[in-house]
Image (cartoon, rainbow, N blue to C red; front, side):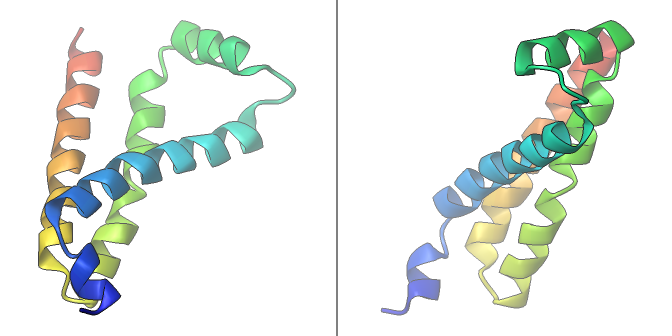
Length: 98
């Protein structure tokens, strides 16, 4: 069985859909922290009211893996990424609403 066939499942897509935004946030943090620690950075973005905007930017990175999975015809993994992205979208919407 090829590696592509082994990885073509919803769980792989869901894990990728959760990990890639965390990696994107880490990169975002490293480039925009301006000497702040992680707790200080969270305090700053909470005070500025930018939590939902930063989450949206980080979740946007899921488009890349979604397109990669589609390109390699890993449709089950694409479904996992899409499901987690929708869950992230509801979370961002909930944060923005309240």
